[in-house]
Length: 423
Image 1 (tube, one colour):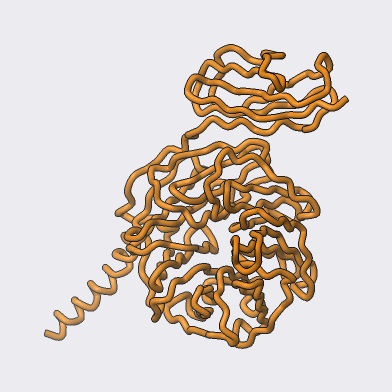
Image 2: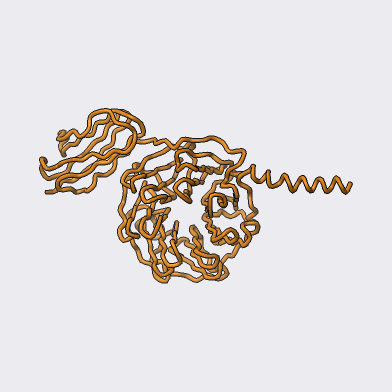
């Protein structure tokens, strides 16, 4: 009997790691049914979760146990970021921003200078950080707003690098380094900076749908995701964005690349958790078995293997295999799904300007220019073109000053934009 018991224990010890590996993602006990909105780890043991029900959860053992810190006063938290096991920030509604230097035991308020939601934040070190957010229409006050906040002294002071009234909020922000960053939000908004936020340039995303998250991967490559399976990618620093379909119309809440090849997307719907994973820079995406049924709001990966995802009804899942398990499902090619016509640059222009566009497959392309009364004044392209990105020069030196429209037709789609010629 003793031998049989020892044999049983030995088999369990041998099999359990194999079972965990085969699952890819495993549930952790959060001890709550609160919706968990954002998660960040400083190392393999110390992690924090922002909850939109006045809670910040903390673990010191990699997620085996979580403690609800509930720092007073009550704040609905949407974003959280730590630069070490001790120092971090949490952002909430009404512009409420909190800061800790002891791992979350005590928190102090910082003056964000705004009154909207602090939807997302990103720090590149203990001094330099950015926050993206905004105020919904009618909450409170008459006008919606969107903004990007910046600190260069650890949050002692915050300045508004971007602030616009009567515009929808920004929901995601990410920086590749101290210079290159992106912010995305409602109504298809994408902004890019190449000087640390001194200038934020709005880009043409090709959609009016809502973005929730963005990840800058290389100086030229970035990805953004949003509602109803929305995925876009740029490979030219944001000049053009390709729309892609990754096999599902579930909402996407978060995207993170840890290098130029390895990334994840999370989301889901009311009854499903969705996680997609790529190891070839987005050429193919694998639908992983999340091991959970609830919508996932956010996730965080320390490296190619170790990550956590959080979501509705207190859901926390953890992986030590990059999410890879035996029960992975479909593989999707990252194929473009839309024709993109970018805004010409420069605009307005004096003599020549570049018109950039991308097409998802080879097609007969016609690119034409019209004046305000609809007369065709130039035909720039009329012929077969390969799939991909293209740039065509419009020479306006033979045209009078004024407003013009340029139209891209592929047979499958037609796109039109306006440009201004000023001598």
